[in-house]
Image (cartoon, rainbow, N blue to C red; front, top):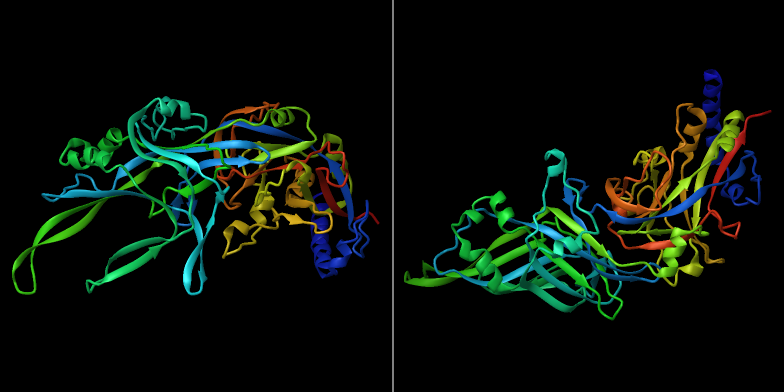
Length: 526
């Protein structure tokens, strides 16, 4: 048997080489069970069992590693999705002091307190003037934005686990957090709308001449100066500012709360760990110095103290699905509903026992195996399709072997990497149908060749970054997945996008767009 498998593997190499040498037209004539081409590649389609799981509660206090830098990306705002309805995202963040035991010079006056949260953006040029195109912003309307101090203490470690494991916080905990808000309004904007305008700074250069500089667009606003005067400046020399732990207990966090208005709203992805993200307290004081004539004069000096956001930051979500959509998700629908945020994922079960045993008993070389998901445009109500889909081993919360072996990279845009494993959406210009192709060739080969391999459930989710493969915990979901392998984790990259789409499922009436497993193979029987 091992010898036979070895022969099959060698044969596979020659067949693949032959296929690569074949012209593209050989693969465009798929009209049924057999692909008419010299290599004799054939196609079988297998029905799969697929259904939607509604994530009622997911862990959201997790950061990502992007190269050598940590990202703590969270959604903030209101997004009215044409299919999934209105969702609101707020953020509760720890705050840390940039410098412990800060000292303010005698006579220092707090001039302003500025919050800065850069948008994700791309720099362009128009008539030699730099302009920016915003990214990761969903919707074009406004929302009410308020910032208040929270007295809720965010633990880094879980007390129930003897402080040996990280504390998990979930997307449905905003009602709890709001019980601990103070009465102080640090910032309120009744209609906040993100802007692509660059930030202008007017200052002086080294020669003392007026100079104007610019930075990328950001949520940059003035906060309540009196609040920070009492909270920080007036506490100079106190125990509260003497150490990081004391300060964390003293100033436990800020709640960035979004509330819907009558317009469509907008939702923004922010990186709270960005080096430019934080709050700066700008103060001024007079300092004695000598002028060019040697006279003693007072010179106004401007300095600042920085506050940065802590590692523990929680995204909360509020909103309900429309009644009809909730019924479709819970019932035996013909569609698969996938949405990011505190949304939904798809569960896919490939091969029943008979189909898998049948494949094992035949002398076949598996050339390619794909799941093809077609967007149901009739139910999208004009919504944009998500950028990518992510397929994974749901039983073990791990990547598939096809993900690991796809080495395709896009250095200019890493979000478009691994396009062999998970294709970019492709729209047929004639039919208008949009399709996503998810490759699981090696996964299927392993199921056939490895007697110890388990036919695991597969999960499929929307993702804003195919390179992020971390998982987060699930607090509650429906329906409950049968069997021993419960839904305990989901891809973290699905939580940081509100995008979603409706796909034709396994019971769709249209045979051409129905969700199926397509296996391309070559028979070695002579």
